[in-house]
Image 1 (spheres, rainbow, N blue to C red):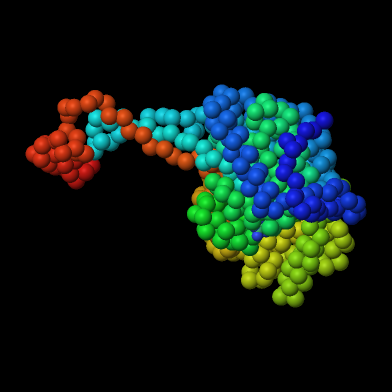
Image 2: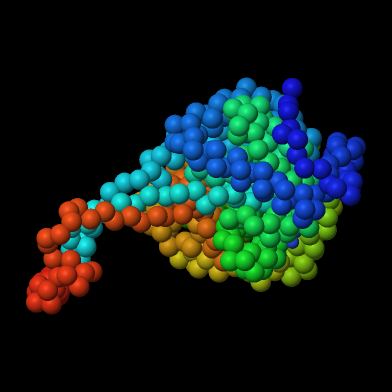
Length: 500
Ligand code: NAD
């Protein structure tokens, strides 16, 4: 039985219904929290965060691992909530929960190693001082999440922020508030009662997210579209509240002449069609060297044709997304593209059947904007150099994948890509590795979640020096040091730097 830590209620009683994207059935009714309730949640969270800080590394690790074990035991319950609100198959939702567990485990076990106080070299100008680097929690982190991976994606901020010693107030997407509430109640159930308010959920639409960004939280971790990220950034700018923005992607797969085409086609079809293409780092563009382009397209079409929406992947979670997919398809076809599989007739609400496009103009919306549907564009290029150039020409730079004859060649190509994460010989490989940071640049946002960077994202560096002994020695930061001694030391330093 879940116990929600008596979340703030909307004072004016405003609520909203969440409907199944599959059949429109009402799944739940949730409060629309306004600025006053959001501020109250932040206030309560801040009080719990002080107790959390006092719990130390061991206390926090033990509580987070207890939560992780409880989530693992309740995987089916969480996965069913995800499946109901997003429409994705339960087996996909279970895999999503597993990913979140892997990250929570890593964050809990590695927070002390990454953020704990340690000695660093003092350098010759601070001779006689011990230098220590420590990280303190930022305080309360406001997490604003999307609907496409309502457990894994926000947990990339929530788990790491908690492990770094912070409290979290989470605003899930208005499409998946039930999942958000379940995460918070599972936390409250699993940890000692004094920490129950450490992770609170507020629900509502954009206004609630905006209220969270201006509620006085110490950092905002936003995941969503770049357009919304800009609005959140504007609100954060007013109070200089730091922002981490994980936005979308337009990920490319580069395929060389000697690549294993069967492996590439398998990975491309999964990367483009899984979760109905609603993956920020999903495959949207493929650049294949001309000599293998035809063969690769044939394999992709054959595999994609075998997929059944409703079984292999779910519906468009956001109904209005169908219109975006339709616009991208029609514009691409009108601009000279050809569809060896599917076309506008693939849109059968609430599902979109797989679509494969070839010869899409590079300036078409289908190549520049996030399509967020089970659609993949496969263009031919002269060589891998041209593939790199086209992959990097996108306003987004989140993920990419490379298939080449040898791993060495793949690695060399990976290093020339601007994407924040690159998989060689697979797609999305880096997302499952908790010690690797995740994030992008440009329209894909800024900052990183996951890994050591993801822990440091929710911590504030504190530099400490400790003078080794009082008196004696040459101290450049003291009038007690004679001018001659200070000058001798500066000259010594100058010579050292001129020489090395
Ligand atoms: P969205 O931008 O519509 O909404 C994201 C969140 O922001 C929601 O909780 C929403 O209620 C809230 N919001 C809306 N307006 C707001 C405002 N003015 N102020 C504060 N909050 C506001 O995005 P979405 O449709 O929920 O998610 C899909 C997008 O997320 C896609 O672009 C996808 O690529 C991206 N995404 C990125 C990652 C990543 O890690 N890079 C992961 C998953 C999804």
